[in-house]
Length: 471
Ligand SMILES: Cc1cc2nc3c(=O)[nH]c(=O)nc-3n(C[C@H](O)[C@H](O)[C@H](O)COP(=O)(O)O)c2cc1C
Ligand code: SF4
Image 1 (cartoon, rainbow, N blue to C red):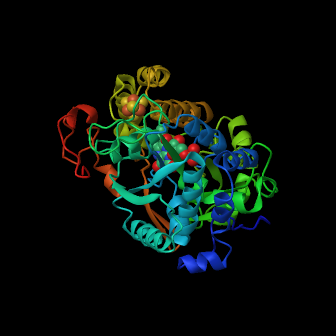
Image 2 (image 1 turned 30 degrees about the vertical axis):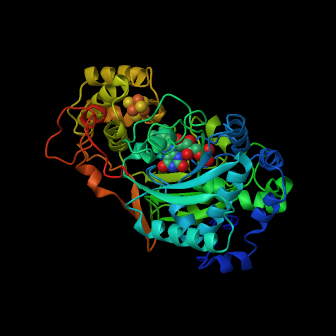
Image 3 (image 1 turned 120 degrees about the vertical axis):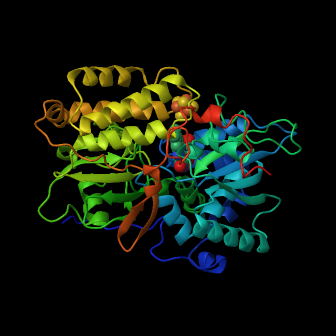
């Protein structure tokens, strides 16, 4: 068993029950430090810390703040959006952070707002995250009562369950009262619409919940302190979620650079009795990690070097009982359904891939189907507006590359048919067990839950519809 221990830089072991409790444990010092600094100096410190975004892409947080600040429009207020949509399959870390200490995230967002000179903070959450929404609302009220928000308006937006809602430009679209369809224009140029309806658009800063939870201590203790753990390119810690075929499921914070094996052992208790880990999926945004590579350090650079990625630290474990065609079919299905259809290759090639991979699992696919699958993997990301299509490409390509025998076994009928693996958002982790959103089994390509798919892509189906969240 590994000798790693969990750390508690952003994920306190017990829930922080009040703002006072947060302050007792050193909370508020980051904001105090920020209030005594010029906005540029705050950005410099975050830049120097090397903090990278924890929402999936690992983009340097300080650089993003710099860009947003540079695009600021004097006459229009910038907005800070806390991305708490958490829809990546296998992840539950943002909700865990918010359950334990929402004050830390509010404090981080207030510091970000000062850095980019924003006058509005919106928590982008999902209506279905009822417990976390309530906790964040209560924290905001306490923070406002304590006068921490100095001229900054704080609010919570309760959005839909769609996976794309977490994509940053789709998140802004949704808060603006439309459906979660990604934009072409970057968020630092087109943020939120100012009321009234036809007023110009101000820039927005979108950061993940965990990214912002790291900010208060960087301000309070300095960039060098932040870099005392982790690696040069991946300083700090990572809040990881471990689910799948492990002894237990859970969320824990580890030092960047901890081996993947140790993360799985420490948070998930390791493989099930008598079983071996065959592969690990880091969400559905990166390449699969074969079991032979479990000693890889959990950092952006080490995981990228083996053809995968850190993503949002969502490690879904598959053991030697799992047929990887079932995983491929489940992941392809999830991504094809969640695709909005603004880019034809993403939706149509995605559906084609999902259907043919299903045939593979049923042992009715032929070499011809495999040829089409390879071809569509090559085209699915053509002219794509957001990263979802590339996710489909990267993940499926890696599954074919690392587990050709599983695919071959079904095409030659050497393997019995298997059911596809349900890959979808987590709705909870409690009692050491993760609960996947089972409703996704009924979800159609048109985003309905009807018996049959209408054949209309979401972007066309909702063309004249008014979202229920529209003010
Ligand atoms: C399809 C898709 C879904 C995403 N879902 C989430 C999400 O649920 N939460 C999140 O923080 N980022 C999500 N992202 C990443 C965001 O677009 C964005 O990169 C992130 O919020 C930036 O924050 P960070 O720089 O602090 O990581 C998603 C991206 C894509 C392409
Ligand atoms: S790449 Fe796919 S999910 Fe992204 S905007 Fe295009 S169709 Fe929609």
